[in-house]
Image (cartoon, rainbow over all chains, first blue to last red; front, side):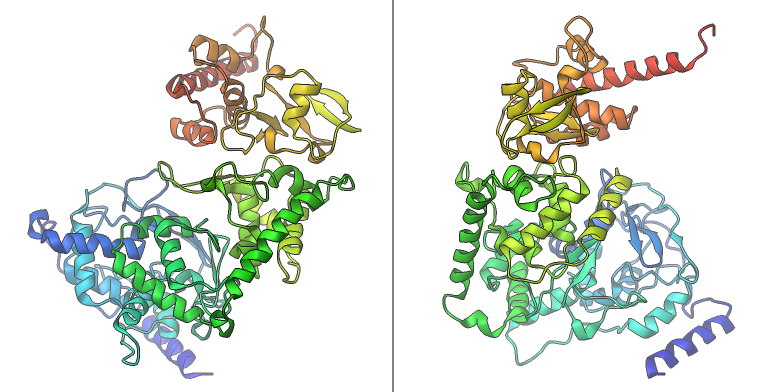
Length: 440
Length: 164
């Protein structure tokens, strides 16, 4: 039994002895919401940029709902949690919260009434954010339009339903404290590390989690998951055939696509959509830090990237020529599906330069250790956010049967990469198909 | 030879298995409702239904279709007896040049077969892949709503006992 387990056990015993209440006093009622005009405009503007880095809007807004009014269901290991209304509505939002209440939620994971907050709200990262930055975010949030919207009750299993149990989770996995700079690194590197580990909470998806939902810090940013998508490794284990440079990461984070790596899709799409509103220097700092985490010996080898690009392009052109032959008549044949359904865009000369897709051999999804992103994109396609510019690929959920999708995905892996075949494609196709139907 | 089930009839097709369904419909079977727009799955003019789902026929090789049910706009009704969606598109005068309309109708048909009472937001989201360059989207949306209403009334009438 390690120290942490003992600590968690004694925390639980303490809670049971105290009847489950939290050892923090309830905050005295604040008569009214703070006046909008009481916030400094420059602070609000800074808060807007920081909130964009924090991706607050994505979780605290439901599809088609008012911004920040909450209600988005998040499926977790323990059941479904609904994101809360963080507009300044006094009754259903956080209109009565003071700056200190807000800071305590961000730093300690406790709400204004003293209740433990579920770590679906990533305070294990937000605790790294300085009080000054939290104050700016508070100013931004409190000057949004108040929206009256009750948060639906969570649907959780025991013991997660029992909020004091969160204290046990915290004892195990929560280390409070703001970011401590690494003096041996540059200021911009430290800014990036501060944002990535703190406000941007990249690890919430990109770090693998254990059975209790804690992040495995020994594999920090080593690849995790989000909403049935694989969140790629942001370390030297990144599957990208072309090593990411700082400039390429910056372009990807800022615009949502990068011609030698791929296109932001799934849960990453709203992240980059939000980052377009972040401060340019902050996005650059994130790119500097992540690029340094991804450094691997061959990154420095001259010509490695160009060689990877040349191979990928060659394979794509070859796939079109080769697969158009007459031997691909079986309906289950991935090469035949590719030739009929995919090759019109992937391999053919593009209709216009802007319509050129990323070469499949270069994409993170086809090179990833996990087939889910490739399956998602084959089935659902790529769609820009409504009203926004971006890559458009039609989904093939209607065109292809499960068997055909499996054959195609296996073919993509074998044809465009040198990596071992995926072994779990059939189960994953079934899972993702079911999830698509239930979301409809 | 590849056998295709289109609008309830079986057709034996002699073509390269990679041939897009759209070419077979238009060039071999004279079912010219579905149109060639972009050939890249970006506009929806070629939309038909496969096993109840709206599908870009320009990107669907016939090799993936044996054993599946294909429905085109010709399968919804005739000039004399248009189906509910066709009727609604005529009533709302939803076509300007008309090039996108067969695709629009087929995508809407797929929606209404699954969800007889879609909300406005659901109609908009579902119809998103299909484009109309004339800009008759508002009429198209009205036509889909009108068809949904008419189909619900008809369904209600059919489930009631005749003398009530």
